[in-house]
Image: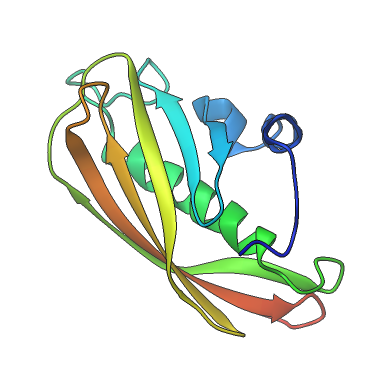
Length: 143
């Protein structure tokens, strides 16, 4: 499905200088039609009550959907993938360890991509379900 081929280590290295690196997001697997990642639950991803911050879950979803859209660009030298809308349903609290995400396409069009990300705790309990809509723009296009 992917138009771009990358190694997990290559993407993880690229992410180190972005929010993904700051939050500790790490891609684990690039599958034929999905991406798997993990994010630690720690001082950088918890809210003051000690639970995984909903914004960290949304950032994980947006990071993975954006990477997936990048993999789908016809020409990354002249195109960019930009987030249009994200929603996240926080279904269960997570307090420690890691959360794991699986990102899959809902719709891949020429200009719009829609991604679903399910986030699970270490016991395979669904913590968050998120949907990201991405627009594909020409790099010369003004937002």
